[in-house]
Image 1 (spheres, helix red, strand yellow):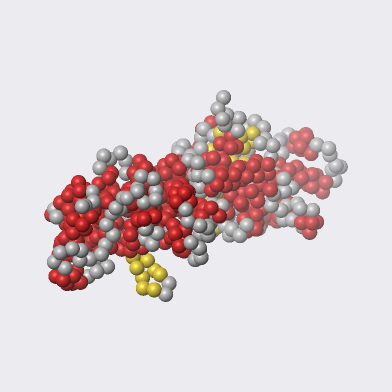
Image 2: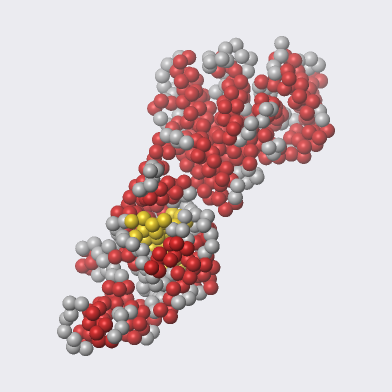
Length: 593
């Protein structure tokens, strides 16, 4: 027996939660039944009753039986409605009274959105559901959405489809296949339901191909054009969950087998959708409280990054991870008040590191496998995290400085990922991107977050961590240790990871030096024949002789020079790069002894 063997609703909740925006909902008349809007069969029998009473027939206990005996046929909604009302306008008028609530209905809560409608609206508001397909004429779903502040794109006719907001851009897309009860173009009869317009068919083909489905309240027996769309859909990329209060009918069973649908037995739509919404919310909350599976988040980012059509899901993943981290930063355990102690410093560093791990590793993934489109998003994230950290202005200086430590982790992981993939142009753009500061001149990303440029870096403090006592570059060594621990997410198993990390720090130092002009550096060099002639943050490469030798050789090789200059480093000036190399040599000479 498996954990979810007898719990398909929880299985569905996981699928909905982990594939945000992927599942569409297909709703039939059964969903509106609990709102006391009659089904097609109930309308049929009521029409039989009203016609018979108008002809002088006495009240019957079984109008279906009476109709069979009278006509020799089964009561048929389509045939009866077509016989009573010959025009679409007449049919719309007849249906209006069955759907539109009167004053008494409103007072008694009839013909208004049900708990199921409200639960679906909550899932839409949270971004888990974006597409709703329905055969219903009523407006219960739209009304529930609007009560949640969601204005849906409603398509109830081919004309409306032609002028509607594209499916991709809509926050919530409601496709009313049979029309709206206030519109004369509703589809009622068998003839009208036998085929959809080509534009409808194309849209349905796309929805059935690109989305998973949650079906509720639809029998699958009628609606010939909808059945045809189901049968021609070839794809199985996302699952179908078909809810039923009993066994599926033969027509529905045919469709379920064709699409390998999973059947969920329910007691009612209200209970089912409320349970689904609650379980999805529980999963969301549990992830916020404890992102137990960082690997799941990282693998989701890789999956979303691999295909352009998953950009929305990737953006949602990044937003959630960032928001979760910001909530964590506001926790009392990170208060800027309190006394300094080595134990507390070590404890806070570990807590910050744990909180930042999911987003940091995802940032590394973006650096390693992105295509440049992600750059602005990453910049927004690091700027947003930094600004959030800066909102606290009072407290112990060391605790205030440490609040932006997660920002530095994200900055470093993205930069290392870019370096691992030799994405030099994006790396340079990232490092020199403007960093607006209120009431002060703008700085650049590298000037805010790289090693000693970051206000939270004090070598004497970071030397307090285990294993870093008396280290010349304690913070750089610590950052290497963290990136090395998480490197499987974005750097693979490369035996040269140490060199990759130090290559990133070196190129970041080059970008930092670009705050000076070439003329300024020339003058500084002329005035300083020996020793350092320009300040720049230098990490492990300053004392790590093997890496320093390799990187200095790289920076003087024609191939690397060409690559870096073409990417925008050193103002695309060979002479500027030569000045940097000379300055780096002097740092290495000073730090290595």
